[in-house]
Amino acid sequence: MCTFDFYPHQMPKWVKIVARILGAFVGLLLLSALSFILFLTVTEFSPVSKSKAVIDGTGKTKEPSRREYSLLTWNIGYAGLGREMDFFYDGGTMNRPPHWQFLHYFNGIKKVLRAQEKTDFVLLQEVDVCSKRDWYQDEYTILTSAMTKYYHGFAQNYDCRFVPLPLTDPMGKVKAGLVTFSSIPPDEATIQYYGSDFSWPLRLVMLKRCYMLFRFRLDNGKDLVIINLHNSAYDSTGVLREKELHVLDSVINGENERGNYVIAGGDWNSNPRGFNVRTIHQGDLVTTIEPPIPGSYLRGWNFVYDSLTPSNRYTDIPYRKGETKTTIIDFFVVSENVEVKNISTIPMGFEYSDHEPVVMKIRLK
Image 1 (cartoon, rainbow, N blue to C red):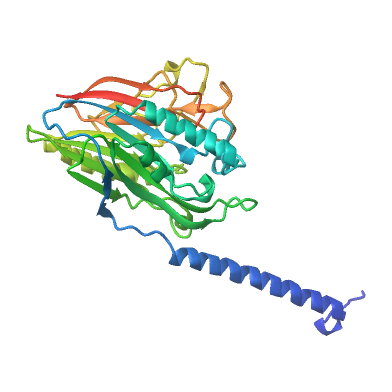
Image 2: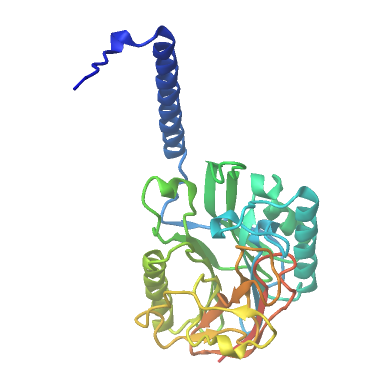
């Protein structure tokens, strides 16, 4: 039996050169990756758990005896997820629209909000501030300039110097948050972070979820508490959402025990309790989100939503009625001393965002 022993010194010179070049290239890639992760770690957005929100703007004089109010909640999807868009996180390929299409979405959003200018409280999610995905437009400043009859506050929940995905067209710089508009001045405004982050290093490029609370003192010794929230998505186990619900449950039950009026609204990224796909008959493909909100949280609270109209559509494909999956994840949770007079989702065919605005009118008992 013949054997062949190969020794490195027997390699042709050109093979050794190629091997050294490849080794140097791989080493450079590893060094670049480690340097990039170090950069993201050093520049990571690490907010304190609770802080006061800065309130600007002007509105009406507060009427402590007033008992009827209206609210709107809308995840505007950074004006980048209108009807024609899909999104790479959800199985699509895109992360931002062409500039002309972004302007169409953003101008449409402003038009809808201006048409709702008599609404007392406007709760917005995914408002970008000079991010690549919104063509470096300061949406917060532009919206506050257009909505001149409101006090307003911003709660930052996303700040990454460079999101490297998708690799073919990285999302790049992202800065975004929640915006709450109020027609009357709040007596207190706070931002509370859940601490429900993904583990390192994924958390470096993900949101730091939070809620923003506006408090209004009334003449009967009670407070009206308005909470604007955007809870976790991309959480198939439900662990992050459960952490967030634990925080919310503790806060709003504490307010309720003091006899205050409590309204929490926004993008919950979960279906409201009692949601039934069979109540929606507009021809949409409707689905549920798993896991549901655990029964141990928000027990005894009223889940208020328009059961006839989907508020959110999936972004794995552009919106096509009857083909694109839809659901309800934008709603309000209210205490028993809040009477809901009506609630409706404004159906716009997801023209400007992957969410539809939801409007509610209430009376404080």
